[in-house]
Length: 353
Ligand SMILES: Cc1ncc(COP(=O)(O)O)c(C=O)c1O
Image (cartoon, rainbow, N blue to C red; front, side):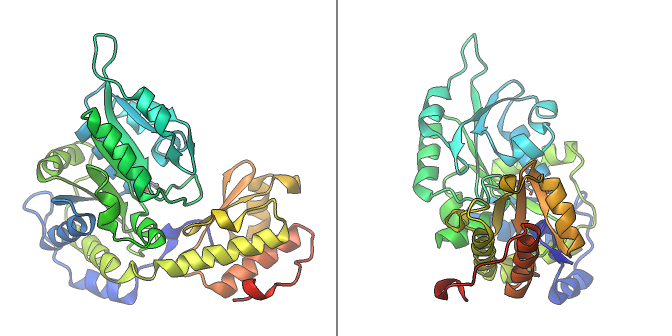
């Protein structure tokens, strides 16, 4: 099977498995664990923040960030298509007790004028804006990358109103690779940031929330409240350390494979996707013109050995990662082309890589 459903399917490397066997087994919830502390310090360094807290998932780091930044009833401003609004089951309201306002955006970047108009202080009629939220790379916008200048503007606007900014950086290192900058250059435009070692970085489990020392101390209490304190988490942290030390530099390969995939799908039919939109490792394919729904496409591709998840009724989301090479992508495009009932036109010189 060629598994293009997600970069979370990446398996730990042999070196990771070895480091997991040799990790410390301290009770992180009771006395702390040496390996977990080392991962948290490394995460803080990679984001340019004072401290980090290791958690089981990206969803939990986002939830704990909300709980730590904002009091119940406060309003969170974020882009309409953000993962936390669309795929984290309403924890923002149901668990954190926050109002939220999804703002319109382009390629994951909420409109700055809308943000300017919507930021508001506490009055006798409003609880006020409690938090501004960004996502980079942006999942539903097909792995789109927020430019640094844009992030700086959002952070500047929020600061004018003394409102903290959180960055959902589940794929922070993909964003850094695409922008050709260090992860710290991105994370400087927010007060807190989370990222996942469990996505394209091949660790089996884990996300880290980073921020100032006092923020992370408070976040640790909220982590405990939502059941996120782990006991002998050393082996998981050991894999996370190797994820950061050895897996970040290869991410551009996944971006190239995604581009190749997008070019192939575009050759099948230009309505499916525009390779120019592909900045990182996610490719969204619009199958509307085929007259079949994305779920049907997903089932038909599975029968041909290609696993792809529907993103909505007419869109498939392909994700490239360490286990996907150029031949896999070509096979996937071939399967897609057969199902589209159309011969692939021959490659031209500049797409034959
Ligand atoms: C942008 C973004 N944030 C958060 C998450 C949640 O991460 P997890 O699946 O580890 O809870 C995801 C998962 O795909 C994501 O893409």
